[in-house]
Image (cartoon, rainbow, N blue to C red; front, side, top):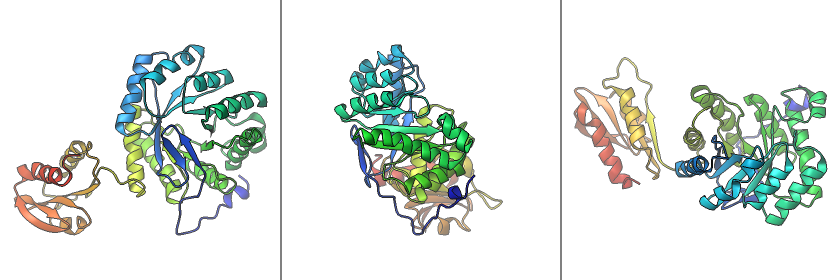
Length: 366
């Protein structure tokens, strides 16, 4: 790795990077607009029924933009049908065959994702840019460790942040030469440190919005941790306009993790946030199961609310002081707490329902 790759300087306090705004259907990426959440279907795009159902499930879960694979002409022929049954921003993921991108534009998709490492000759990229410009839709230049152009790989080797940046800027210049500026760029590695450095290097060289994530993060447990570290580090240092959590799982679960990352970075104020102590020998109630049930039973609520579920009376009220409502274990039961103050004593068998009833009163269940 060269010295330049290690020369990223971070200044505190962090402010969100200023970027141009790019419209994707009814969602605006960049320009100071809220960080949006993306995911990708894992159905066979040729199976229109399954694909449409999964797209709808993703939007209902809180996804802002959904991407579909378009691997061949047969899949491309299904795009108009899918588009006609779905409202919400759709992105076509294109590799190797530029004509598939043209078909997606014709089908009314809202964004095209191309890969600099495999689209081919410059004129093919220009054809895609021309079609997108006429349709008024953006292009995402998406790079990952498996898609870098061969000459750049030979120059830098694998896992070098500078390689990602050079490849992205080379591709963006092709589009810029076509007077095309509705560009979004993503640089994703499986390494959190490479992803972090690459995105910060790129952020110093352009004002395009950045789609961030850790590629091939893995199964839910390890992939969630890796994504939270990589995406969270970038967001907390001002980088990132739209995110995708890549998990080897049902893509709806990606949305849940993405929401939690945004909430942890204080970039999304929506829904119930359950804070709970890690338990210790002083814990007087079955805290683990209780916290999990309350989290599950409040997941549908959109109203911002901080809920505390604490295990004992020693630290419970104090640690829950920042919460809007909560419960804590105590002798022979527990207590209902509001803003750190004990409101009333409750038997253990009534703790869960009492808290849920209070949450219902405060949010209206919405």
